[in-house]
Length: 219
Ligand SMILES: Nc1nc2c(ncn2[C@@H]2O[C@H](COP(=O)(O)OP(=O)(O)O)[C@@H](O)[C@H]2O)c(=O)[nH]1
Ligand SMILES: Nc1ncnc2c1ncn2[C@@H]1O[C@H](COP(=O)(O)OP(=O)(O)O)[C@@H](O)[C@H]1O
Image (cartoon, rainbow, N blue to C red; front, side, top):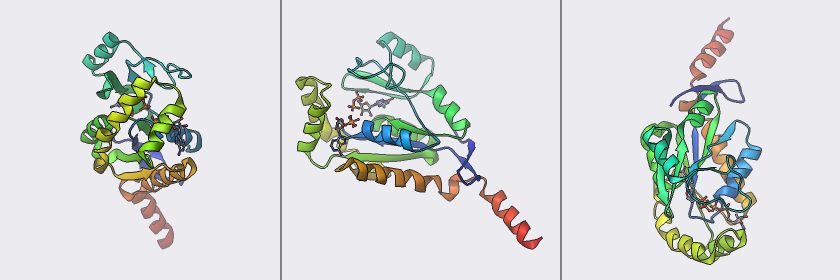
């Protein structure tokens, strides 16, 4: 999964896979939307899911909403890069769009859980940058789940009771961001992406670039 594109400074760079995970309600959808709006060269991976659509969600934009047989067919056909079961529903990352974006030199943003992150890491360790988002407190997490007003009380209770289990995977991530304030959390996530884009190992065009600089200096 190593492909070349050009960084903003013109030096060829390998695309990276930028993963955001968090317990439900901690803010990863909010932060993902801001990143896609404000960071050029970053494309969202739209997951397939068997969960029902929430009010305000759009098929093909937020998720590809599929039924269970279609999901199974995607798994069997090796159409998914990773997949997992979360809250009794199945979620998976369609392989085609990710590979196409990376080969076009774009970075790809994933809003996936710890199980998916582990699978991506096994497949492409050097290209995965992972960020775990934590809520400032349990009370805030619950408030946010209610304020989103998209789940029943029973679903919210389920999400709260899973939060501690999900959070237990925090130490598997490269970076941790605590989402007190959206603007601050966004600035932190953005800084991580900007710095990771500049990493020497990803900038495969540097050898040629430096050689050409040296040539200019000698010439
Ligand atoms: N492994 C994996 N997890 C996913 C995928 N898409 C979404 N998820 C995770 O599934 C969980 C539930 O997502 P969702 O039902 O949208 O609720 P949310 O937690 O409020 O965003 C979240 O932890 C998502 O990160 C996917 O393609 N693969
Ligand atoms: N820093 C924050 N302060 C207050 N509310 C927030 C913050 N970040 C996100 N929210 C709100 O919390 C709710 C859950 O956020 P969302 O991004 O949907 O979480 P997730 O995708 O992790 O489940 C949304 O209503 C969102 O607007």
